[in-house]
Image (cartoon, rainbow, N blue to C red; front, side, top):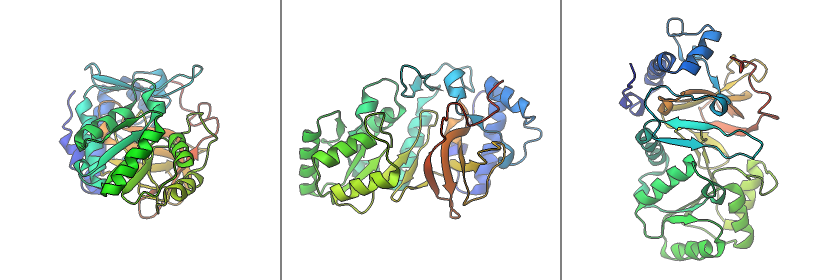
Length: 328
């Protein structure tokens, strides 16, 4: 079986359907993904003894740096690659069917924000535009095109032009989304503070070595004051995922129905934690059906009782620590 009916993924509407589909994806990936199968076998987990979602093994995210994590013999249509320094190895996400990514990010965005055609989308993503293979740029570029607004587009370092465009859109009362990397939004806030009453500001995280790292609360406080808005929105995604979580304020994230975040014990990576406890974040992203849908990340977080998620940062020395099951 090398094909998976992705409609099973994007029509999930409750926890029962999620678990049923997750178990199907697990079996599919165990059979078709050699790296994941070897990893599962080391843990003595397979489709015969994994009967619940909580028993599915999570592949350490570092494998995307060292192995071809793919669940089909089909060649990738696109390869997304993470940013990295000259000393570090980048993650590569082999995507055999980019239409799954497009369906995932479009349905995810519209679940939380409504039709993309309702927005003028302005993108301030210089660090991502300066390299090839960014999944974030691919997503935002597609959303910009779908918005069909004549002013939608990307801005590299031309902050003065962006400021003028934002003021023009504000005067017209245009519903606008400004999506940007953290350091660039801070640059805009310092150079061109302005009241934005019709604009949603969404940060995608990351100083990318350009500025001192700030915790999210500090970043949001600076931006809310500079732009006179009540909340700063956030997007949580990564090269190794085909879905995104979104926050409409206070750093509390929600996921689309085919994505789930869990927390694991930082000392015992095979043990999942109850809600309310801080731990390493494990992600189930069922849109990753042709790579790996079950990933142990290097991020720290806490799941609230209502299912929302707080992202708290990253492991220290995360390339070294994380999971002691990396050696195959």
